[in-house]
Each structure stands twice: as structure tokens, then as C-alpha cells.
Image 1 (cartoon, rainbow, N blue to C red):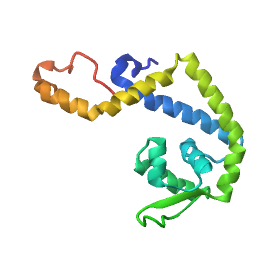
Image 2 (image 1 turned 90 degrees about the vertical axis):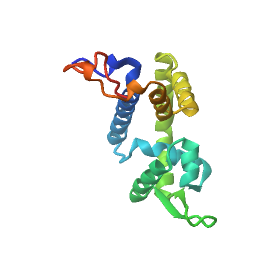
Image 3 (image 1 turned 135 degrees about the horizontal axis):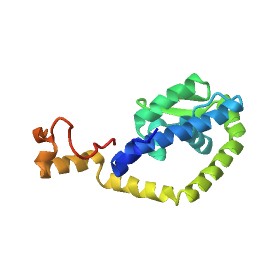
Length: 182
């Protein structure tokens, strides 16, 4: 079967990144499962930060990892349910929670550190094989920090009113160019 997403080229950046993330997370999940470890790949960043810094708030973790507060909160719940992390109300800010590794979490991090080192080595090798894709991702990240997809689209809509309008002249087949699958 043909990869339809690839045929959209740059218009499919989001779809391609999601697919790659799924493949990487799925493969990492297979490794953990083969080792008999119940583990979700999305936990890695938070566990590493807590191992390095001890107690951190959800906001501090979000800032350190460059992800949304809601994502950290959701991951916190699954880590707490698994017994790897404990949280308590921040004594300085009662609206915030501070997370720390539980004894079970500390043991798991120690057990996984060699595996994570190996995964980091493989990631470095993949990056080199792919022509330093991390550098390209850094540039994409910077471009989106300068102006988000939303901001860019709002600008496009205000400068080209026909972009947001439906085109009756497109005919029954729809537009002649591929639709983006961002």
C-alpha cells in the first residue's frame, strides 16, 4: 500500500511527526514489555527530571520539558496510579502540586538508566543516519515559536480572503491540489 501521507510533502508535517512518534513509542514499548516492565514511553521525561532535581511542580516540569501543563498533569495521574510518583500540595502555592519519585519510582529509574543510555545511543545513530533530523526539528520548533501555525493561518486568511471561502468552481472532484493533513 502506498503511503498517502508522504504524497502531501510539507503539508503533512504534523501527520508525519505523529506517525514517527507512534512508531518510536511502540518500539520502545516492545522493549519494556520484553523486559517484563509495565512502562509508558511518555513517562521518561518526567521521571528523568524528577531523578535529576528531586521535587518539582507540574509547571516546572512542563517548562523543563517544553510541553503543556495539561500533558504533565495527565501523565502525573498515570505515574501516581502506577506508584512511581507521589505528589503533594506545594507549601508555597496551594494551587500547585509538587511531584517526587516514590521508592518504587527511584528503583525503576535505576533499573532503566542503562536501557535509556542504549536508547539514547541508538537515537544518536538514527539522527546521524537521517542527516541530523534533530537540527531540522530545532529549526521547525524555532519557526513555530516565532509564529504558530494558527497565527500563520490567521495571517493567510486576512491577506487572502479566498483561502477561507469555499470554492464552487472546484467542481465535483474538489480542489485540484492535495489537501494538507497537518
